[in-house]
Length: 270
Image (cartoon, rainbow, N blue to C red; front, side, top):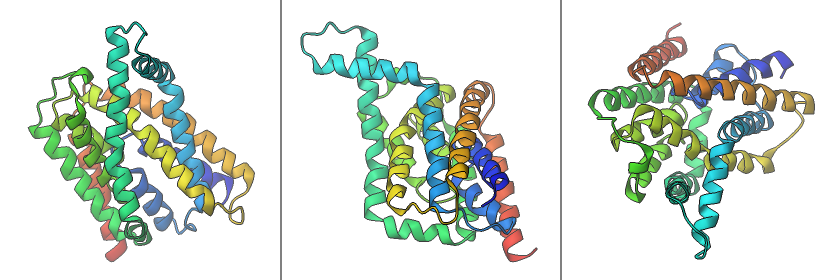
């Protein structure tokens, strides 16, 4: 792939990984419509690693607090503040919330991989993402802070995240919907969604490493993919956390419906 194509896909990945509009759908459908070659596994790994770094850097102070809280909880002699207890709990909520996606990925890996081979599947699942966002945005009562979470609620959000293994189901959209379902404020649901993505995005990157090949991408373009998706990803996180406080998710649902319908028309009619 050319450097310009890598830059464009890096921008798409950085934006759509964190906005609730499905990065997987865009990375399948945009190259398909532009008649580009399908992005190689090495580029996919670079783009995922870039967005992993975006989360790691943006939330680094909070991640340090989570690790500090965890270390304190494992040391019975350590003096624990209420903040330490909260961040220790947050670590375990992230672990619990990751379990469903890992289980589904291990049990249905071949079936999930097959869904990435047809452009119609992400287009249809985009419509589903829109419905999910619209329903939770309309019928939820988002009024609680992250401290109201417990293991059951974290597991429920994790079940929503497992849906995002299929192309077209937005990971952030699904987990934010899960957060709204258990009563979290939109900005708190988004915050937990991004932290919850750390092990999943890193795991997806690691799983792609054995399949890496430099035949269709140069090391330079590989680094460009990481850099662009990482920078754009940090901007998208910052923008969305501010936007979601005052903007309803229905607007993202409408975008998913419009892009999904356009994609289906483009595939079957145009």
